[in-house]
Amino acid sequence: MVAITVSIVSFMMIRLSGDPAVALAGENATSQEIELIREQYGFDRPILIQYLDWAARAIQGDFGESPYFNQPVTQIIGDRIGVTMKLGVMALLFAVVFSIPVGVLASIRPNTWIDRTALGISVMGQAMPSFWFGLIMIIVLGVWLRLLPISGTDSLANFVMPTIALGYYGIPAFMRLTRSGMLEVLSSDHIRTARAKGLRWGRVLFKHALRNAIIPVVALAAVQLGFLLGGSIVIESVFALHGIGYLAWESIGRSDLPVVQAIVLLLSMIFVGLTLVSDIINAFLDPRIRVK
Amino acid sequence: MSTPVVSIQALDAGLGETVIFPSPGKIIRMRMRRHKGFIVGSIAVLLTFLIAILAPIVAPHDPYEQNLENRLKPAIWQEKGTWNHPLGTDNLGRDYLSRLVYGCRISLIIGFSIMMIALVLGTIMGMLAGYYGGKVDMVVSFLITVRLALPAVLVALAVVALIGGSMTVVIVVLGFLIWARIAVVMRASTQRIRSNDYVAAAQAAGCSTLRILLTEILPNLADNLVVVATLEIGRAILLEAALSFLGMGVMPPTPSWGLMISEGKEFMFFYPHLIAIPGIALFVLVLGMNLLGDGIRDVTTPEGRS
Image (cartoon, rainbow over all chains, first blue to last red; front, side, top):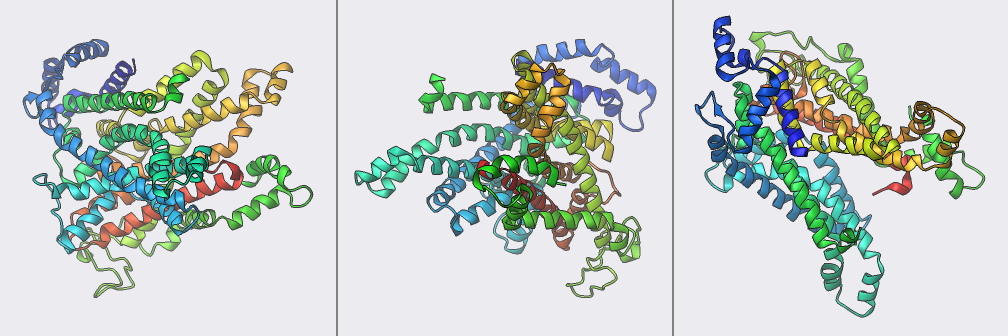
């Protein structure tokens, strides 16, 4: 249901915001040329028919052909999606690996300098434009210190900066959730019992407390991956990574609508899917939700 | 601007803890003075406001005036920098400080306008969903899910590119894309307020639904609204910057900070300050907005801190 509406909304928005035939024909096209393109791509039909036609084929995995590449859209996207997925997953891992330990530390020593620093990082992270952070990293790490390559996708080293630039965006949410979850769990009865019966503090912390506190974090991770994939368009264009975000940006620039529509739909579907996964994970890990 | 909004809430919170003295307004003012984030945030935001309003006085030059003989002049701390152009000039010889100062205006105007559209949409939808529940709630929740599933940056880029970039287009498109979070917050708050006795009393007295929504519920949403609105402005400013950076937002020669970073990108290896400076400006403004929003929330509802 959500999937269908998303597809309608994205289709309509992109179609109604301009005449695709004019956009496709370029600035110097004559009116006959525009008419020809309009007929060729079926832009002269009612928009509802156009949508149904597009949707019916999209379900079968056929998104038409890109007028720019003269290749099926599915194939073009298939070639590029690996890079975006790799970037998204790595950014997510980076965010999780960074924020859980910091969140735990902050929750053990609330209102100390550790907690304050953690809070500071998360507040600053939310205010920093990701593309700017990426550019600054390119200048400092790539050009001044010459530690990392500044663009391309050849090796894992190419992904380090994009991963950080994209992943830090997810850090505040994870860190806050870990911290507040841990604070809540640590003050509960079973932790007091565990400590009272003389268990080692580390064991209590990781086995008893973190296990409970981490459930919402895991669920958030699925949703965050969706956001990170959506945000990769900016990062990919900064680092010239040839993923679908960069492809979308280029395609928008050259009015390659079939590609743009397919990518919007694909990212939305991934997001819907991940939200579902997140609900399932939640129910799987937390019996209380299943009861509700 | 916060005093009338704040005092209602303070009355609730304040009565329990302080029996006789400080007045609710005084408690709020005390909390404000103690809240570091609130102070830093307000200073940053106020400063930006002042610079934006006084832009013609603060800026040493015309931000649009090109001078090709003066291209890429160094900033004051670099060799051969002059006080005539404290931050140097850009690739078209325009004074960088002046562009930065006028950029304040653009960021604030865009941030506020986007927020207003999103706020109106989000509040109406959130209030209706929260108040009526049932089918209305289902429809609104569905719309929220759909909107969250759409990749905002990508859709905004595509639509702006097709319609043609301008400030108005960017404002309208982003305004229609970021209402979802506001709607979520307003829906939850309305649900909470709806069950209060005074709403039931108003219903029993025969008030119309519109009147209940406007005079009983909306005023109680106000402090929540201020908080969400402040945080959303920050997000809107960052989104505009990203769009302009990608070349599908505000069009040149407008001095938008995002656009300045994009224009400076070409020369960033030789003149890194061209991208560093507008980025820092964005960072300070958005950080200020976020600190202010968090601060208002903490000051008005100290028990609801997460």
